[in-house]
Length: 101
Ligand SMILES: [Zn+2]
Image (cartoon, rainbow, N blue to C red; front, side, top):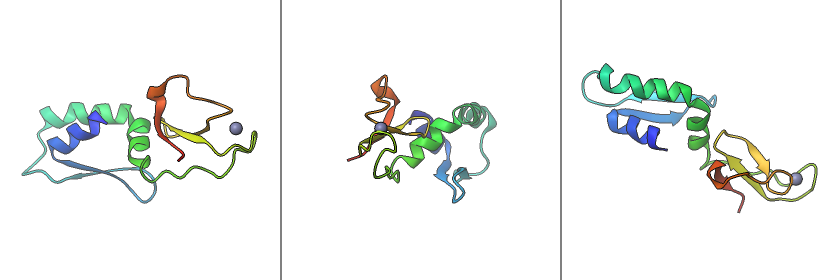
């Protein structure tokens, strides 16, 4: 995710906290420069769901079966939702962050 890359470049470490929230740690030199980091932080708060989903995608585990159709194929959306491939296929591919194997 571009925004996360930009924050890292600016000097922040961006991670998932144990309670599933965003954890930002300043690891840059000296103090964060407001002119550079403020627009990024504002964007991050506007796109929090997407940023969280992006960080969660690597540890995402799909459920075994869909309750409705009993299929086992799922996809993980950019908004952090786990969705059945059969019941609700993604409208466009850019909504998909990850798929069940
Ligand atoms: Zn289903």
